[in-house]
Length: 83
Image 1: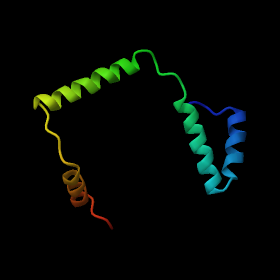
Image 2: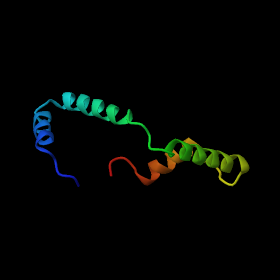
Image 3: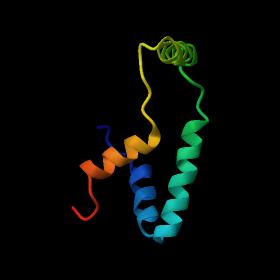
């Protein structure tokens, strides 16, 4: 893992002094700025191909979908509340 610069350490120390709500807002804003970065070359095309392949698999019957209610039921059985 990369070492923190003195500037980042100072900002972190100040951020940790904020309230939980203020830290949450800061985190949200920082994440938004990461999403604004341009995608690496070829990433969008690769995702487009993957999406097309998955849709084709479903339409051709090579892959069967599972109803959301069934997935949620199975998850609830596997991970009951209170455990």
